[in-house]
Length: 114
Length: 113
Image (cartoon, rainbow over all chains, first blue to last red; front, side, top):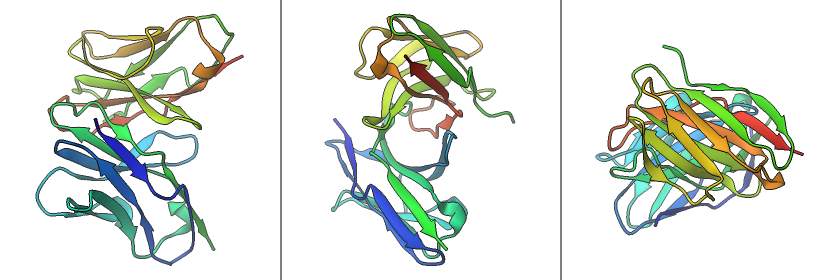
């Protein structure tokens, strides 16, 4: 079975500062990795995904993540955050042939302060 | 292209009743997945339907069921509602390939009193 651990439940940061949201996963088989963002009272929006290939993945809104197989991590980074990045961020995994089944971490609440 | 739509957006039910939630996927998408989101348990996978068949299932009791129609629209039913069923229910659609991006709807907020 797969599991996902997001190491920080809340991350406060000042505007224009860099941020890293940490995600570790556990699986006995190869997985595919995703980061989603959820704004208040909305559904989830995909930020980026790792399926194969380059371990550095670039997504929307200036976010990027690096897949590290040896450390089973998929941390999300942004070099300079904006107030509008305030939201909850979810790391998720799925397996081959189970693309419709995402296993999510508990979420990290990013709070960007002016 | 229209996104995933869910109806109703908000619902209040009484313990013991049953409820049906609806999800219309993006045009051309054949897979619909359902998730329950609560503050305590987070986001949990309920089930996935593909071409009118349940393809994957999470660890929820049999009170939670679903179905998919030939136009890929899906419904989720919860019978004998419990207070703990209060949650945001999210539906996501995808093309249904082995690895695919899921597009989420805005969710249905269910409150059980």
